[in-house]
Length: 173
Ligand code: NI
Image 1 (cartoon, helix red, strand yellow):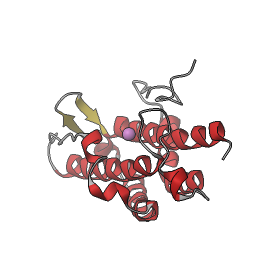
Image 2 (cartoon, protein in one colour):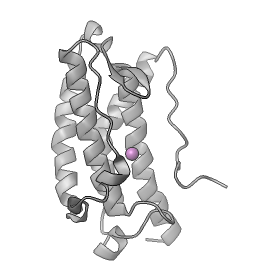
Image 3 (tube, helix red, strand yellow):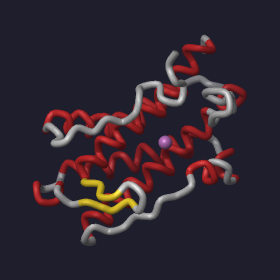
Image 4 (cartoon, protein in one colour):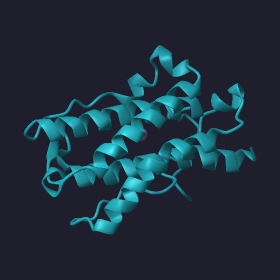
């Protein structure tokens, strides 16, 4: 029985990270806006407001969560590049998902993600070897290097897209 919360399994970050793995992860980040947009293509409001699993977020909440999470990721990487090992601010994802703007049209977050990921990928592609060695500190998880962060958000992109594509398979949508 697969765990519906983890359709592609938990994030697995090798140490050290092979160059090829890092390139593939950057490609996942580049592809997320198009893949997420394709995953929700043609869904009506009732379908968007359906939880991807019992007790889980709706498709709409998943889309807005990806935008919120990746705005944090982008900011965390920028902090890491401009300050020495900055401590980043975690946030309560579940509480954020219950704020009023999670009822917004998903296009708002899809458009945001398209622009955000374009800038994010442009930034990553320009990083020097020295910059790739920078890190930020997560108060609970400790030091996160930029390569690790990219792999983590590659996983996060595929993880949440799979919530939606699995739901569509299950529902025959
Ligand atoms: Ni998430």
